[in-house]
Structures are given as C-alpha cells and as structure tokens.
Length: 413
Image 1 (cartoon, helix red, strand yellow):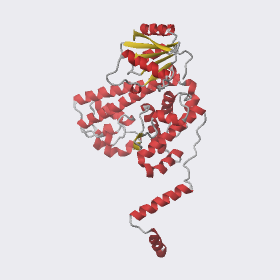
Image 2 (cartoon, rainbow, N blue to C red):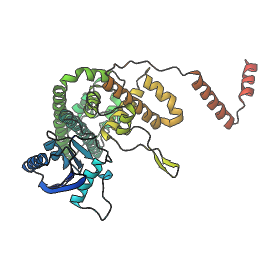
Image 3 (cartoon, rainbow, N blue to C red):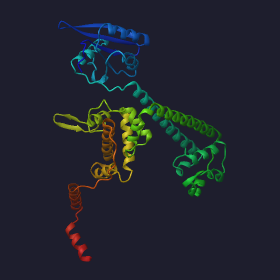
C-alpha cells in the first residue's frame, strides 16, 4: 500500500485527546512532528487542516473502544485512513507513551508491517447500525418473554407448557385477559386459535392458576414493553427497506439460498457489502468471519484448531442460516450435513455447513451469479466404500462376524 506522498501520520486515540505524530522523510533523514488535539468536531477539523499543511498522505490510528469513530468520520473525506487493532500494535509493558505509540503506528505502517481492519463505507455503516439494532431489539423481546414466563409460574399458570409461543396470537389474547383479572379457564381457553384448539383439555389444566395484583401489574408492564419493541422492529424494517431499495435484486439472489429469508439477506448485505469488494477470495472471507479452522501451533505441535474470533454478527447469522438449511429437505446443505455428521458430530457438521454457505454468499455477491439448488448429492463410490469399511470395523469391534451372520440369514431364508 505505497502512498504517493511519503509523509505518514499516526494517531493515538483517547476519549478527550489525540496524540498525533507526522513521519517525514527529507534527504534520507526521518523527522517527526508532534502535536496534541482534542476530540470535538472543531478540533478534528483543525487536525485535518494541520495534516493537510504537513502534506500527509496516509493516516493510521488504532481502534480504541468507540473513540476512533468521530476521528475516522471527520478525516475520511480528506485522507486515506487505516485502522489497526490495539492488540496488534500494543507497546511492551513499561514502554507506553502517547507520542511513542503514535510514532510506532506511523513507522510500522511505512514499513508495511501493519494489518488494517475492514471499515465499510458510510452507506454500509448505516445498514449495519439498522440491522444490528434490530437484532438487539428482538433479543430484548426474548428476554421479556422469559420474564413473563417467570411471572406466570408465580401464579401456577403453565401456559408455555402447552403453547410454544406465549406471545403468539392465542397466547397474547390470553395474557390480555389475565391482566384484566380473568380467571375462568373456559373463557381463557376460548381464545385459542389454530392447532391450539385441539389441546383444550391440556390448556384448561395449564391455565388453572391465578396471579396476584402485583404480578398482574408487572405482566401488563411487560406486555406494553413488547408492544413498543414490536413497533420499533416494524419501523426498522421499513427504514431498511427504504435504504436498500436499490439492491432489491441482490437481496432476491441471497434469498434463494436455503435458510436465508429477507431479514437474513438484509443482514448479509449490511455486513459484507453489495459486492464484497474487501475480500479477494472466499477463503479470505471465511477467515475474516471466523468460520474456518484456526491454528495454535508451537514447536511443530498443533494444540488447537479452534476458530479465531471474527465478525460475531455474521458468524451468528451464518450458523442460524446453516441450521435452517439443514432442516430444509432435498437440499445440498442437508445432504452435506448428513455426510459429515458421522465424522464431525452435529455441531461440527453444522459449522462446516455454515462455512460452505459463507463461501456461497461470497460467490453470489462477488461474481453476481445466481444460486442453483442441485439437491442432495448421491454419494460417489469412494464415499460408499469408506462407509462400508467403517461399518465393518464397527461390527468387528462389537464381535459380530458379518459373513457368518449373512450365511445364517441365507440359510433361514
């Protein structure tokens, strides 16, 4: 990443101040200009003007908590910016100084010794805020659901033992009546809809309880919170649909992957970008997400293959997509899971499916191709032979003579 201008600025970011060092090369000699700035908007504007006066070509900073964000947003219009993880540029213990840290950033960037983080553009950052906020709001609804179940247990009401979702149409109607003080199980069970009507007897037994006034008050409070959160989710969905309206075709391509619905497609687009420009290969993308085997080797011994930490939002999403795809019949990913499960067990096989889905997502975004479902692949002869050898070994360990058993079966037939 050689810059046209040889001057490089390193910024040590803090909450209230910025330590800035400009590395300059003049006649084969390296000189440093040092200066401190605040973190307010006006101070960042002064910083940008000073860096332009110093003829800076690249600006390097470390991702200190959330404090680097306003600095990045204020400078990205003027300079090529590079963000580095603090763990990769940390100073040795006892040798940490603000200016020294900023100088180290500039020197290491100039020598090509730094690995920078991926920071998306402004539009994609907005998408990320919207999708991640939606995930958090949905998690809050789940937390309140657990709290409501605890309140119902206080009164001996076992609604969740019969209804899988207490916040569904039937459960919500029953909860509204419970809040009003209704205790007649016939009236409460009469709110059942759909399949739940077939469980009338179990439902009446589960609803044969009573909440004290305090618990009814808390239940009403939780239900009002859920209504508010549901409205927020609806508003977030509308805002995402508006902001992503130019990428409808991309969302449709992603939605054709088994296990990917519209919400998952929006999250994939927000985390990766419309064209996955930051990732040259599918392997690089999988490594960045953290859905490929890791390596912890020393002295020729590999102590662990545990995956490295990557994008936690995208890794969670790909795992959810993988489990949904596994339970979709007659799909390639369901067949892949079935082939890998005997060797990797359930979670390991699902992790491998998530890895494969991640590569497919990268291919769709990078190349602009369409997803084609090929169905569950028929095992090739080598796979069948390997399975046969595994079965023979299992029989041998169990003390079963396969040839004798086959001979007896033929004789009895």
